[in-house]
Length: 70
Image (cartoon, rainbow, N blue to C red; front, side):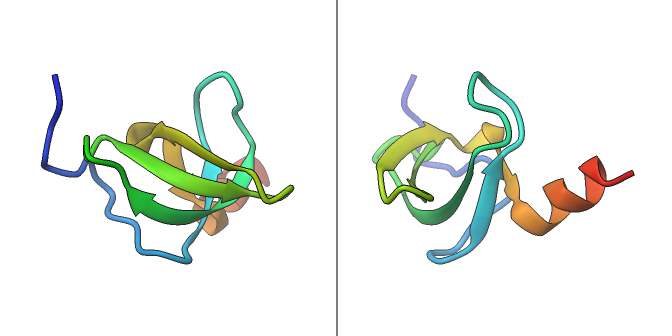
């Protein structure tokens, strides 16, 4: 089912994010935009590749780094 409501948290273009869960957990990137289905987002990964991932898998990079540093 496609949703027009974004999953939380709400990211803004340019936010540093990391895949906090999923098959590519730990992958850092920069948030670009939500897709037509607001539960999916495009991020630019470190190698410049633009990929889409579920928003629910994303976390702010600083939060993910703090949580793994413990």
